[in-house]
Length: 143
Image (tube, rainbow, N blue to C red; front, top):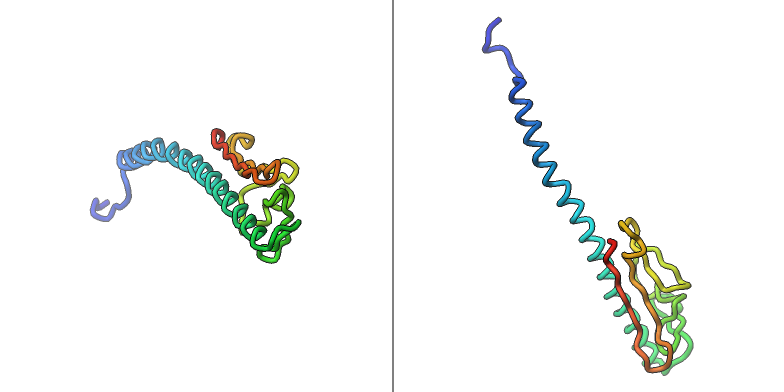
């Protein structure tokens, strides 16, 4: 048989390629997993900022309208407590909170897919009395 007509890879070439791919995978996979955790942390912190902004926007609208029990934002009725959105309607002030599950009874947004969901949350607390500030706390230790 003529050697010039034979084509393909030798066993040594295949072993070298598989070894190189294995080494790359050993370094790439842990970095990729780390990026997922960082992305969940960033999304959680971004939601906390969005909650602060939307609550302040609702508060500004409430003040501009002279107070009252509710304001309308983007066609949604937002029920106010001490001048800020209450727990039942704070999620309606956000344009989007995809990737989070909201519990209206507690005001906790939990990041879907987190390593420890209870430690990857944003908690909104409306003011206890008039002229008190809102509280927005992000926990990212389990993202």
